[in-house]
Length: 101
Image (cartoon, rainbow, N blue to C red; front, side):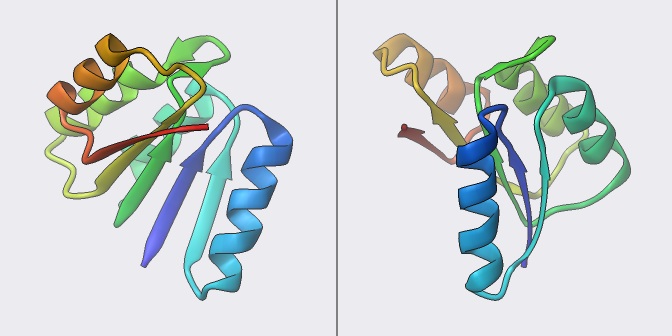
């Protein structure tokens, strides 16, 4: 399984990436909206972990792009935001789950 981690907090990104690789997954990680756009437009993934708040962009926009491109990747939102509105919006846009940090 190929996973993309989109998380701007370096320590959390590194921890998630290290853990998932240790479980035998192929993992790529990025820290910014722009890097994420490049990856999702040029590569295919089985699962994408995406933070909502990113430098120079918003993870919800990335979910919209993935759905417009008909990506078959499972999408899990990981966010410090714990509002019901954000959860509902993320799921309505096509995320499969929403986890609060």
